[in-house]
Length: 113
Length: 112
Image 1: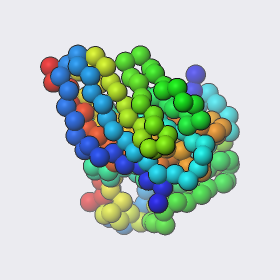
Image 2: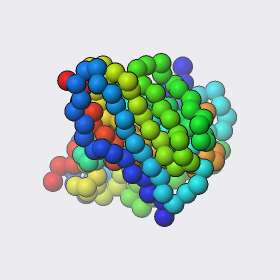
Image 3: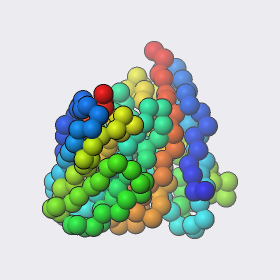
Image 4: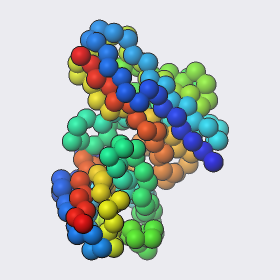
């Protein structure tokens, strides 16, 4: 069966520090991969998605970047965090076929101080 | 704008009773998919049910069922025989190109 791992679960970082959140998927190949951010009391905002190695699409211009160095690995990064980067970040995968649902990781709560 | 609207920020239901969560959406596509996700206090997003827009039959998963009205672009979730474990945020979502568009969620409280 397919599983998705996301870490760390919680992170507190000072303003201006770098960020690296990692997500890996097991049990499937060539998944679509996604990074979402969830602000308090709001829905999910798509940040990045990837349909293959090295293929990254950005939905929202911001202080963050994403990379997909391997088929089942998706990394969310920042060179210098801003206070506004605080939030709950969710990684997800889908089979990539029409109508296939997203399967989410457990999320990372990021607090920028 | 292609949006998903959940007009009920909070709902409550008595244990063992039935509750319906509302969702409307906007789309210019003729073929798409709709989802309900549950987010318990653990914050993990869990798929509850999926509906294919070209199928008129409403999807059902155990105690969860939907009322899909394509012409009205409405996709409500009915939870029957509510249980304490149903307490969570519920998000409605619609497929877009390589993406899901989510509503802002409805917080469901189950009263013992």
